[in-house]
Image (cartoon, rainbow, N blue to C red; front, side, top):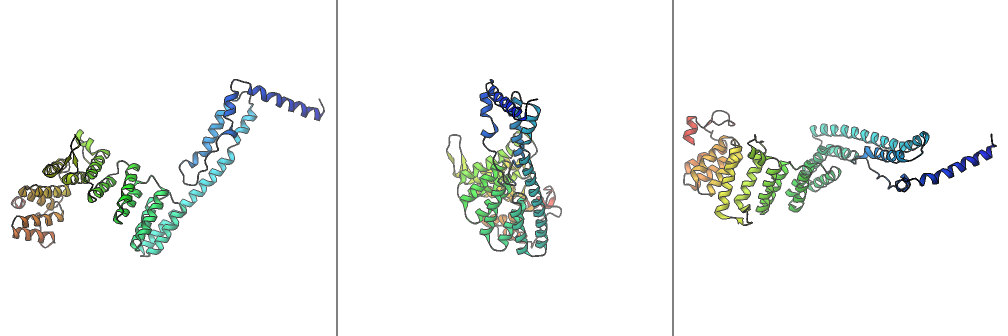
Length: 387
């Protein structure tokens, strides 16, 4: 054979001769633009970020596509290309192992925090929750909420809101955290921030009834009656309540509160006609009454709807119907309805009936219902006389 120096020269010449021929193929320009060295580097993902486990796999699949299209590659070359991402995969596996261990440690800390709470050591529990959320910020929504609750209990509402803000930053798709932060801002008088956070809650979970309901009632309290009505109606639509009504499907119990909020907003002037005109005055009160009646056909056992219906009937000048609705709500266990009934009897000039309603509201007199309040039998003689 040729001397070693000549053999190296021949091998080098073969490599130099091979490269131009490969790039003169029809695939040459496309392959040059897809060379791995010219691709944008894959983003570095921190632990707990979505997509962390797929980073090396996506890089591998790209190399595989480029590698399969290369003309003239032998098996050894393909094996070398496939081996390139292995160090990235190893780094990702180590990172995942560290995250898993961090989650386990955070779980242990949360359990210790629960035991501290049971023992009345609120400050210790707060510190344990703080460490757990620092170690695994995206692992537990409950930990962030418990830490916020402990801050409030210890007299620091600003720290409670700050903890929730860190929580939603770590878990931006958690609708419960967004709603909890919105509630904290509402209590602090920051209506604008509360609106923003309620919006994030329903974006994260469009069927989140509690967020729609609370947002609507916030707007009602702020005097934004049309916004309140629009939000309640949008919540009824998003949660499936309107579709269930159209299709005659069984309702869900938690829809009743949204119907209640919608009727209240309409009664305050939140309705708008098809031509865009505001519905106010007597028309608004009648619209609210009709909405309460509509909701009670769907949720006939709901005491809060019945109570709201009775109050609306009082405003609409129908005391007899109002009295019956308020008594029905009271029989279903809503003591607030007894207070409203007492006020109605005062307005109607019936002091004895008002006094009896107030006594019953304070627990000093029993209702004429000896059985369960959940199933009212209005055909019973004592109830017939009272109603």
